[in-house]
Amino acid sequence: GGVGSTQTPPTAEGGALRAQDLLTGADPQSYDGTVLRLDPLSGAPMADNPLVGGTTLGDDPIIAYGLRNPFRMTARPGTNEMWVGDVGWNDWEEIDRVTQTGDLSIENFGWPCYEGIGKQPGYQGTGLNLCTLLYGQPGTATDPYYTYKHSDRVVPDEACGTGSSSITGLAFYDIGSYPTSYEGALFFADYARNCIWTMPLGPDGEPDVSARFTFASAASTPVDLKIGPGGDLFYVDISGGNIYRIKYVAGTEPPIAVIDANKTDGPTPLVVQFDGSGSFDPDPGDTLAYSWDLDGNGTFGDSTAVAPTRTYSSSGTYKVKLRVTDPHGATAIAGVTITAGNTRPTASITTPTSLTTWHAGSLIGFSGSATDPQQGTLAGSALSWTLVLHHCPDNCHEHTVQTFTGASGSFTAPEHEYPTHLELRLTATDSGGLTDTKSVFLYPETVDLTLASDPPGLNLTAGPQAGVAPFVRTEIVGSSISLSAPSPQTLNGNTYTFVSWSDGG
Image 1 (cartoon, rainbow, N blue to C red):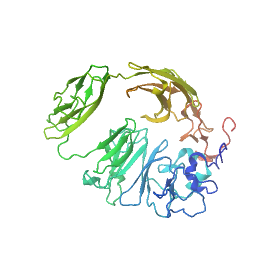
Image 2: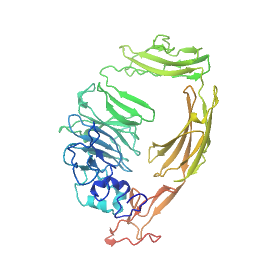
Image 3: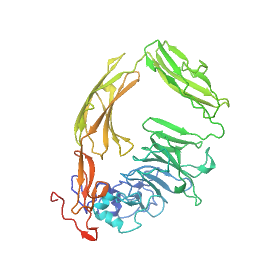
């Protein structure tokens, strides 16, 4: 339709419907929701791609389409398969398989007309020609290999929560340090649920959906999985800014080192009380020996106490470490950075306050400052802001919306499904790299929308939700929502066709 054009059902093909561009050859081909296969040296489409040489301009790289948010994908060792983690909308997460990346078939995974196995109620209710075409040709859309509903646990009775969901990591295990039962297994992770699961191989040599189990129920916001050279699973924790490694240990388990300090910065002489008493060994009855590197020179033995004290008289940064050893000789190390001669700044948010409310499209100004014991008032260049959206259908997950630098500025409140709220974070950084972060939570103005039908009991659709009228949805003021009345419908043996909405539309 071009920029600024208006699209209406049933002929609309914009928005998320661009994921089905291959079905609408009369308009320009986009790469929304597609998997592209390219020559790694030239970046050009692979010569044996199924659409190379066809009449549609720009479709040569495409080998799969109909995906919503294929956030991660992985190659299956020993095959030409690509496995895709497709982050869902309101109801379903998908693992999709591109069976042969070099064959002549092109998988269409159905988004937005399908989500999970079934038809997406919001798009089905609008009566779109594009979705009707898919629905009328069973088998045109490829079902996910595995899909799980946001309201259900992946594994019954597990500790991982439900509600918010976001499939954000895939990795196949080959051969390594894990037991042989893991060989060929598929690991998959969910950022919002803080969990990693395993799908081992079944008797047919394929990942067995029915045999899936919880691998790590307290993984911290995993967004990427990789198998390391030694066969250990690594994952990226995006919220904590860490990379984690999960090792397999046969027999007795190694200890866990935990280090604590009553302060990590301050003027000299800086007296720090350390504490390693939180360290432990999983094996019953094992006791630990302690060894400290208190001066940060890389050599242990400065103290063997559980909780030593150290005075830092010279300014500098000291990387203090604790090594704990169990009776079997297994060790673990933890560390903490001590900054002597410098004290972290104090950040302060002036506006907005926690009493500020917003609606979609609101312009919100912000301002703040920071003071530092050594530098005084910090310049605006030392202040960084992050606007975070918390989406909370049940358990919350975060989306970073925007970042800013300076003492003040403004942003436009985003449009998003309810329940949602915003958090504005201010981080002040001094010349020594020490930081302080303050935040303010901002909650939206909402309105309840009641959808009714005459007669009552007919099906209506509001956004992604289809329901029997009357029903109520809570939405953020100023946001847009799609409403539809599927027609015709049957109720109590009578057939009804749509006439109009109550405002005449």
